[in-house]
Image 1: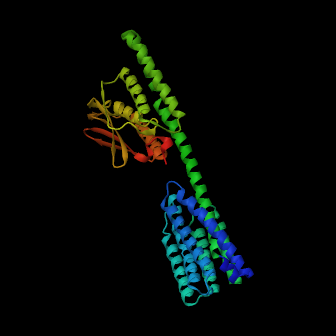
Image 2: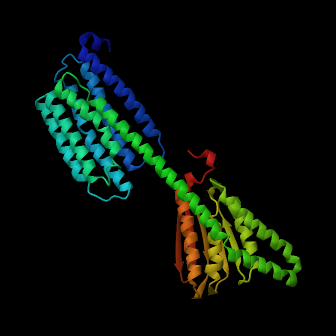
Image 3: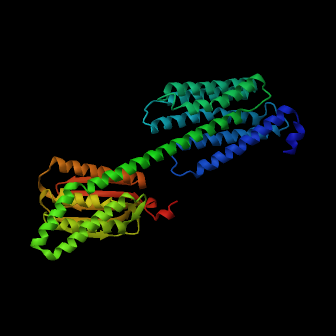
Length: 416
């Protein structure tokens, strides 16, 4: 570093050195924060690649300043080559951004076009070594990026942050064209990448907020589905009948009914994952309540290979309800329900199966109720633990299978 200051103590070189060092610090910070972020997507992968390439360009530029042959040195050329490929990588990032927002378009045309410009930069760098021409090509790249954003984005408003960020590399290119002794390409690019990163963070926060709102709405919807009025009325009516037919069972029936209501209301205020044993307590309470209602007899079998895991509240219980009322309850044959758990291929598998088969008597209201419940469970599994729910129907019955990634099913305070 001392050699740099001794050899190039003029105003331009000192300015370039200061901007390179500041740019390297900013790049390292952005790179570290990006790598440590959870749930990396392909979109963030292209961004990290762009940051790394820009970091390489800054390193070569700093090395060129300490080289005895500063102008036209191999380090200068290497830094230009690195800077030239930041724009194509951003093009790939933008493609994934649009796709994640539901926009389908062929953005690879723009990326290929950017790569062709990058090849021209490399060619002029190797054979000409002209800083003036290099800055002109950089300027063309950023103008092409701006055109891409304005043409391909769903709306100018959606890409306004990107367009604003382009002011930095466009300005540094214009400065380089006006006076080629200034080499600020790396600084302009890291400012642009910082803008992109902040935009990504804002999108992530927006998606998280949307997911939280959707989760809350689905929890309320599920609660209303679980405690719909006719179920409460039927339960109370059956308990009233038990007072005459079997007075000794009334107390247990009331306890089961109150326990069922309490568990459902508790689930509304539960924002996190709960132990599987806690969910099964709710399932058992529901089964006790279902047994007092006028329905065919049924038997529940449990086969648990694993119980030390967490899952969203009210995920197994709705499936058991469906098995009781829309599996064996709507069938002329079958009376067995099986609940099982196991580890398989990095997943926790929870299965609820029934052997309801034979002649089916489907009611429109029942079908609607079932579809709403399973859709709700699917949504909350996806949002809270990246889980999946699949329903497999056959003449032998129905299998409802929940798959939760094992790393997401560990104790919440141990998740990484």
